[in-house]
Length: 330
Ligand SMILES: NCc1[nH]cc(CCC(=O)O)c1CC(=O)O
Image (cartoon, rainbow, N blue to C red; front, side, top):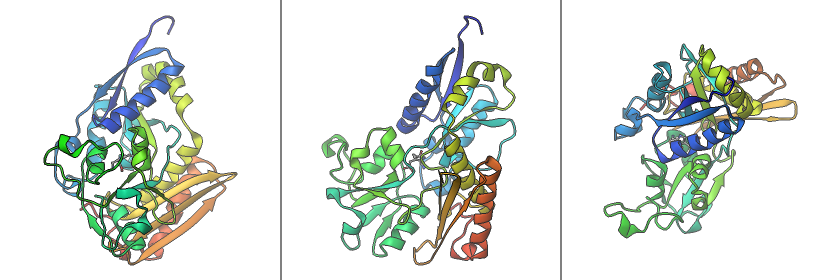
């Protein structure tokens, strides 16, 4: 490289959350140095279309356009939220880095500082996620789940009085009509809205989506020019434990052939010489669930993958497919 500084194009969705996480990652990559970085927002169908997520072809819409931008050279690297990245491998793309995971938990953001157990009978809780809805109903059958979508701030805006919400008068026509919403703690942290959280939901109440809280950097698999410039930086931000955990979670999801709307939670973590994976499948009404946990001492990508596949097969043997439509996209 001698004295030349190459410019690396980093692709991201254009939402505030995506821009903020991409900005943070770009700073970490640049700290290792040797290149200039340019952040390029890519519009995705998920950003443009409105209406229920379930009618837009699933979460894959968020990732597909970013992925084609990498493949056709509009950008060199894409920064994805890992939980929005379909598990099927895309020829020509490589998972270049998985940075250390942020808080994987879901978080309740309720009016008046209320916790889940303190919400009044029949309280309204907003979420567009069947996984969150089913687990909320499993904990509190009386809740009224309201299907909402939109970006993180729009969702927070549905709950009156949350710290950081704009004054009601500033957003005419927007009603704060819900008792609570549930969002990923990681996303709230990345846009500086953690003070809206009234309760972090632990794994026994709500298991997160596979990959939640983690990011993925994807680049062209055969781009040797890029790896010469960026290889060291990518290696520096890659986190082995996070890679193992998300590998197990995603192998489970892939083996279940679970669609984006499947009420499946999964969370893995390494502790000492073991990798643990916990999973739950819940019927949409929250009445029936199957929860399993398994560990391996195979601390490798292969070991993690096998752990995910084996736990998925135990779920299927236990009747997971009778509890819920695992392939559900709607
Ligand atoms: N489905 C949207 C989405 N994709 C990634 C995050 C942020 C958290 C993360 O990186 O896992 C969110 C928002 C949310 O679920 O609250």
